[in-house]
Image (tube, one colour):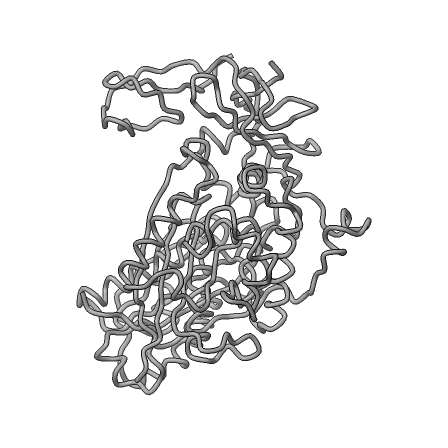
Length: 112
Length: 394
């Protein structure tokens, strides 16, 4: 499974950003090291999308913004049948889209 | 900087167009040119705002195409693509040309023909403005971002679905009085929210947002004529000054904002526009806001400074934003009911405000309107252009 979901730690000031900025938003540093996005956090907000994007054939898609315990926020798919604001979840990597026969990997959140 | 005036405005009816893209752009351009009564004064430059021509209609370089269609050679021409803020950005480009002394008369036309493709393709085309790796890959669309924003906003400020419905009802009512609006249909609280059949009438799109919280997919074009003081003075028409323009950007991914409910770019763009205009929010008599989703009318009206943060839904409840209220918002029907041909929207907002300031908005005229404000909201708030217009007595 190869994925391309990484946060970026600024080698100058330590600020972790997601998604990538070529210049650090905090110190304007230009060197970074990739960092896995993992761990637990809580649901900041979520939505069930019924007017689906291209490539999806489910009835709806549950999307969320999650605030991880290290303070970083991420957007992804919420795999939880009873979502609520503030609920504890864990970030995992899974197939989030199939487009033209290619699987795209990204963040999915499951109950912690 | 030289002052810039809007001396003419025109648009096509929004909705579904059978015309090719450039015919649509030409129709609103001619309407604005007629409205301006320029006589023999030449048009020095043409700026076209458009987002999807290259992808949806397979036509690019629309500025050059429009000059040709209108036989305006050798006028300068360009196209501006700035997402859903393309319209006001194009107006800004035209204003800069006049302010800098590089032109005396500029035609700005916003145009979009989104219904040339099916709804899925149109939604995907707009979704392509979201962050490709951090948002788009997950199936994020603009309604999805709006749904995420709305749930958070509701929990933070006590906004309820009924407040969103009130915005929709008001804007549909206003659009009934606007012959250029896409949707001519009154809606009721029962029909879209409280009656048992409301779940059929108003299905969820990205919960908590239903269909009647979302703008339609529209074709349409809108145009204004900008002129220097020297030219505006020669014309008989009422003078509408572009008193101030402000623009600000924010993070591409919504999750990266310190407070995702804070429309920071709206705040900063509005503050800059007000400062340049020497005006404050309380001076505004009429406003056109970018209600692609009903929640945005509420949130933008706060970020622009018309109401304290978290209080606009109460003002909506009191009817303050109706045509007859203290601050009429979206007399045109807004994006919600007038329609949202993305590249045309920012120009169309100013068309409505010019008509309002000139006393020409028959049937929906805000009385004694002298100062007006528009918010053109690009991306999901990551690029916003605010404009303040003022009528000058002759």
